[in-house]
Length: 257
Ligand SMILES: [Zn+2]
Image (cartoon, rainbow, N blue to C red; front, side):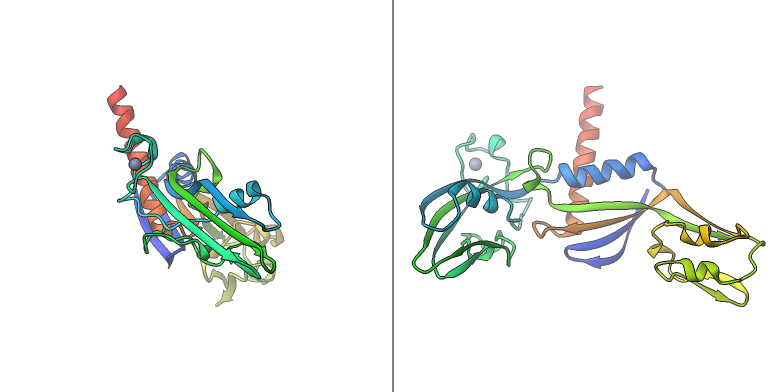
């Protein structure tokens, strides 16, 4: 099985997986969604809240803020050396102290570590004049299968598109018109595909062809993954971490057998 990054960097990438099969591609997708650990706020201690939002709603909003995560440095709380009590190796304590009038954003949460900070620009609450908010929030590692707040990315994949044109083609141009992504063109009386990887397998071209000269199929051994991270981990790291999680599970299975 081979993996190649097709395009993108940072929070959004496209990856090509070759010599694989549908079940492995889906296992990878599911591992990225539910097995890759990230930091998210689990406990909030509210000292003062005179904003228009209840404490519970505020805590829920804080829980969904993505936090930049370093998987090398953090332990799960329940398997940490502190025995689950909470220490710098398993718990990141963020503080917030704001007074209105202003909009409180995710980046107003102060982190003790410059590398483990909340993703910027997410509004949390609007404070009116004189309204105050003072709280402490504890972020811990967790997995998407426990709660969606720990899900690092949205991931989708499609079969690699294969478009074939047979000898019945009269180069009438109907398929060129029909393609909603404008991927086809006619060169020297032949239909050619400009950018096969952008094809969504909608089959509009095949349906438009009266001669039944064009066919669209998905190659079930090659997959194009689109990984869009919420900012807690770079998209490529989400993929790598998912591969590590799968191989850990496979090793466990072997040892059980
Ligand atoms: Zn600990």
